[in-house]
Image (cartoon, one colour):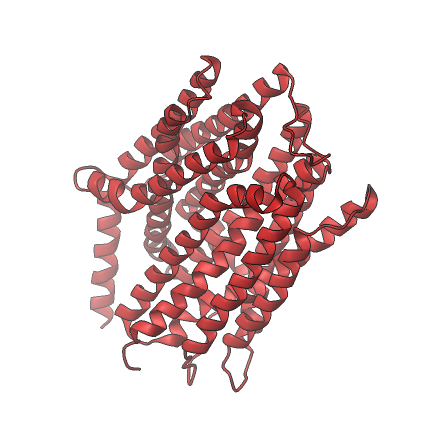
Length: 463
C-alpha cells in the first residue's frame, strides 16, 4: 500500500479527539453527577460502575471477534465505528439527561443507561484501534498513526479536564443538572461529527488480511505462564487504582474543602496543570532521566515522586493552605508527572516481559499480553470508582441534591475523611507497588538486553 496522506492521518486523529472527549466525560463525571447532582447513594453508583467496567473489559475480546468476522462493502471496521458512535452519542446524552425519577426508578435508569453506554462505546472503540493495520502496510506509517491516535486522544481528554466543570456552570446558570445535560448534548454532537470525518476520509485495505483476535481465556493463560508479565499487570492495577481514586475525588476536594465561589476555576486550573505535566512526564522527563538511569530506578523514583506529592497535599490541607491553588498545584505536578512516567514504564516493562516469556515458554504472546493492558486498566478503574463511592458514603459527604447552586456545608469529620481518602489511600497502593515490584520484578536493563540478544541469535540460527 502507498504511504498514507496527511489528510488521512489528520482524520484518524480527529476521530480520536471526539472519542476520548466522550470517554473522559463518562469516566470522570458519572459518579459526581449521579451522587452529588441526582442524589443516589455513592456505594450504589460505585457498584454499578464497577460491574459495568469489568463487564466492558470482558466484552472487548468478543467485540474483536465480531469485527474480525464482519464483511461489508464499506469494509470491516468503519460500519462499526459509525454505528457505535451514533448509538453511543444518544446514550451519552440520556446518561446526563436523567428524568425526574425517585428511588428505585432512578437506580434502574442509571444502571441501564450506563451499561448501554459501555456496550455502545466498545462497539466503536475496538474497531477504531483495530483498524490501524488495515489502513497501511508501511511500518513507519503504522507507528506514526498510533502516535497520532494516542496524542489526539490525550488532547480530547485534556479538553474535558479543562472545560467540563466551567461549561457546566456557565450553561446551567446555577443548575448543575441542566449544565451537564447541555454539555453532554454538545459533546455528543462533536463526537458524531468527528467520527464521520474519520470514516469518510480513512480507507481500509483488508484484502488477504486476517485480523488477530484474543479470547479472555487466552489472555489469562498467557499471563499465568509468564511471571514477569503477571508482576507488571498487578502493578498496573494498583497504580491505576491510585490514579482513578485521585481523579474521582479531586472534584469533591475543590468543591467542599477548598470551596468558595471560584471552586470551578480552581479545579480547572489544577486539572489543566496536572494533565499538562502528565504529558511532560511522558514526553520530556522520562527521556531525560533515561539517559543516565535504568528503567527500574526511574520506576522507583516516580513512585516516590507520586507519594511525596500526596503527602504534601495532605500537609497543605492540615496547615490551612488548601485554598492557595497555586501552592496545591506544586504537589499536583509531582503526582501527575510521576503518573506520566509510570504509564510509559509499565508499557515498556510489559513489552520486555514478552521477550522473557518467549525464552521461557517458546511462544511469543505479544498481542495477547498487550490486550491485557486495556483489560486491567478498565478493571482497575471499576474497582477504584467502587471504593470511591463507598468512601464518600462512609465519610458522610452530603451532595447538593437540591441543585440550587448553593454548596452544601460538610462537617469537619467529613472534610478530614475526604482528605485522607484522597491522599493516604493512593499512597498505600503505591507503597504496595514499591515493595511488591521491587521484590518480584527481575527484568533489569542488563537482563532485557541479554534476552533480546539471545532471541536475535536464535532467529539467526533458524534462518
